[in-house]
Image (cartoon, helix red, strand yellow):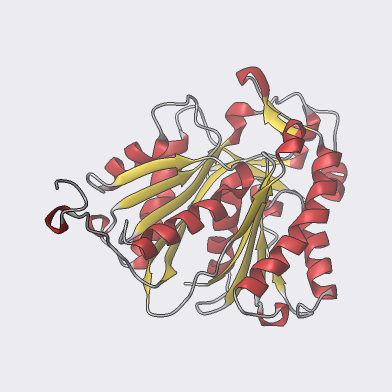
Length: 331
């Protein structure tokens, strides 16, 4: 009989590395720095108001000549260099983004080509501000399954294309940028299991409706994030076989400094160390959605706040509403 009942025609399966790791980091920010005072000159706001409510001092704006792909290429190239990996050694590119100017073409294929990754699998992933964590886990699963050898993961956003610059509720928050990492094989676990989920019943709290600009119910998002993120993060630590006291640094999505501080307080109350390092990149980069976690990672390592081998707890949350958390080892 023909088909899979014939031993000579059975499909072959593949398997990859039993474990994965982050191999490098890179980031990119536009040159233009926009301060709270700059915004106060055109909006009904002030430096004190913004710092008190969201913790932002500066954010970066890309000009019309700079695209999401441009930012992704710069960050991705830096991550490859940091990993000591030639583009020929990468076979998959994932770009986490929610701010492409059109549904097609995607960013990943053009980013791969411009970096020099030929004929690699390439796709975009949209989980908004949780996108980087979603993409890292997807990359890890691809490597462990044998579907990929090394995956370039990039979070890249040009949020200023989608902001109503006369709306002080959103204009003060968002910035542009990109961050990247390389996910590859490892002899031991260095990327922990993901804990992820969604709350689709709250989809109306954040969105871009009618292809115009970002709108959000900030108070509802704040309440949801402060209630949801810490328990999800704690579950990710447990799934990784660790205790909260083992975590060296907390790197949550940089949505709002008050949310970040709330997550840290809850985790410390549940057993995290008093000296837990907490990312506060939002102060100088603003909210960059799926780029915020990798940007913070790269900036924290460059500043010496985290070092290779540190145990990091990543927590993403945002529009969807979607969330994800995982423990990784700093490259």
